[in-house]
Image (cartoon, rainbow, N blue to C red; front, side, top):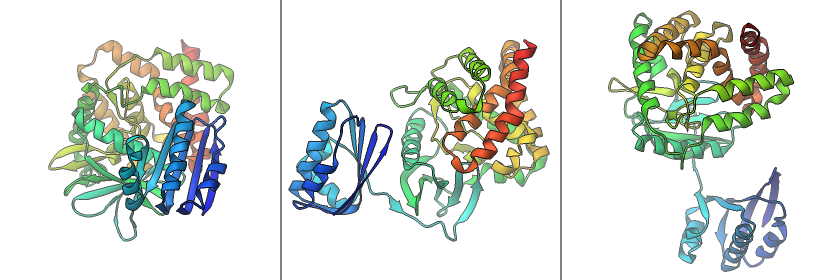
Length: 384
């Protein structure tokens, strides 16, 4: 057996290639140097046989991590190995991820292509969201988990089936019978932007009225504190301090927020909108979603309406204005003023976040932040 290890921070990933039997088990034991490890990942993608000796090695590793109050995950487990885990009772103690289904996107209809990935139609009943190269597979697993939680909470989202692999990329399959991408619907009917903007507003309000399960969903405001710190190299100390001040000034909320809500992450099915791409589903203020929507459609200089939705820039701006009119129709004057004072900051948050996980677009994202968004944010401080 070949055993390869990778360390990232306090996470140790061990990739097994071959048979984990009595001959290989001592080699695995020797590789498991767990001092300082908080999370151990055993990757069985290329291991399709495990003996009782291998089971004992896995059990010892689990016990060592439990004693150190750490976490162990076993991933990419084939049906045969899973059966052995089940028979021995190990699957009752350890988090086990099955081997993902392999798919090919060759010849599939491309529904949309955005900053994070693409959406393809698998057949008339299902679509697949495929993340771009470099996005960690754990994000797809998280998206599936959040999609199920959102469905139970009453959010208009599609049923998520399974996580799949497409070469070195990962994705999530959704059940969407005869559905059409909302961006495509809008592009074919640009004379009815107000109608579609109201549909998006109504869907957003339904999402933002749903109470989030905090045992499953992260608090977005808390996550963004760390994200701004991680992207601190972009800012002066004054800028970082002001961004944190702006973040803390936002209202807290335990309701749902999508944080990537735009027409290319929504499907239309039987005349109704269904949200997909739930990887950043969280609890938090509705303002986080409005900031993202404004960034996509309301700031023409970024060019994101065309990039993310293929809706022309001018029509995208008109779509934003219709949407804002509908969304704020039942909000107080104070809320609208607060939005206007913070809109560029709120628009910047998704871009700052994307810098941390989209290395291929980092230079362009940094340009948007430093040349377009940050000067406008800091201008509000000088004007105050």
